[in-house]
Length: 144
Image (tube, rainbow, N blue to C red; front, side, top):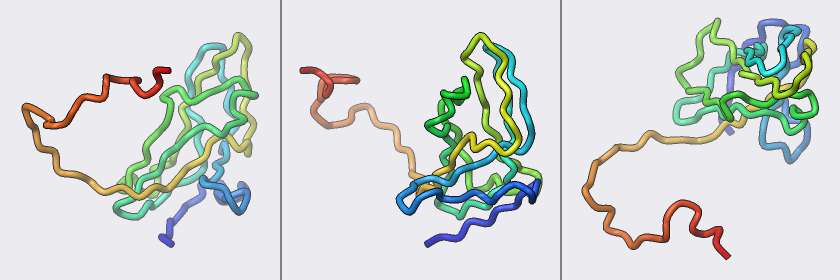
């Protein structure tokens, strides 16, 4: 099992943790209270700098309950590269308030989660033909 070093900016908040034995991702907490106006995008600091091992990356996603707060990830998902590991490289969640009301994210709210995933860089080679049979285009396996 790889080791991931984590630096907390506010030590009163918990370390990221797996909440159940079967959890795939570590929960992350809002470091400060953040007020997000209707339809506004705002960064929520997540209280951690993470040293992800080489050949791994962090996939930062919304918690499934985030919609109940009126927010979603503005960029869909975030990638935390293994070389984003400085003392002040705090992970942040880019939140979109999709409601017509002001949303307040309280300090300590579990707002996002991070999956640590193995990934190797690949060599890119350009070709003029893939040399494979076509499957029918994007979304073709969804046809009845």
